[in-house]
Length: 365
Image 1 (cartoon, rainbow, N blue to C red):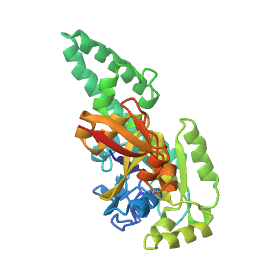
Image 2: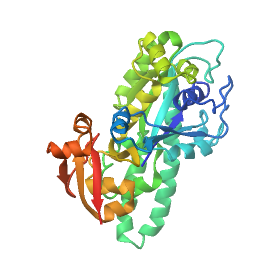
Image 3: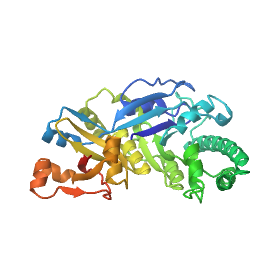
């Protein structure tokens, strides 16, 4: 499985610039006018994982394969997008396909870069976008309840789903996001949530886009964004998209030195992926051998057979056991044979809950 993140925000807040920085490409055109992004730019980038290099040094594989994250740069939304204003519903559909939302808000002033709302107010901007997502969800739930209502007349089980959907509809009509619905985890509403993929049910990471002079500490705009995000427990990342875009052509070492000179410990890509994994409850296990060293993305809490199925469905169906070493032991003892000799390689069965950084060899029929 891979992580998919949709980048959203009002026009001219720095979405395409951020996309270029994250993917280290210049594929997303950035210009000083609204709707510069007409088709959503998409890119699959490797997830930085410093654990793979030590494993590769031990096993000397033919290739090293990182886990990946898909970034989708979605055109700027405006008031009325849910009713077709601006570029309208097409881009709301792009958001629906994403696992999480990266909500970019502008936290810098620059008279040379126009703002579609006429002035800088990141909280206002965030509320505009979130209102449009809520209105789109209201339209979706209305269609859903209409369809279920017709079927519920002759099916008692469908009636339960209809009643649950009507209760959710009332929640949305009150101006509340789907994620805050009190009965969110009930069995009656679960099929509707899975089918509809409501926009306001997605995890959100706010990106406070600052100027180069604001990368060291929060300005007043960023502090307002943090206060706003705290109300829902959302994560906030402060970055300078323009600065990181300019770093795209540098080597990793040069990038690290440059970021250090600004007092920044990690790149925007590292920060955003780390927060993305956190909000979605993801982690990685590792495999190592002469063919390849690889990181695999799974959800926290998955048992060994389900994790094995990420590699191949046959691994899950015919699961026998998992031979597991911690990353630290694997590196310290020089690989699988060293772990076996030291007695630290564990044999785990179907009930084993995978841990981040497990180095695993699966046995299956």
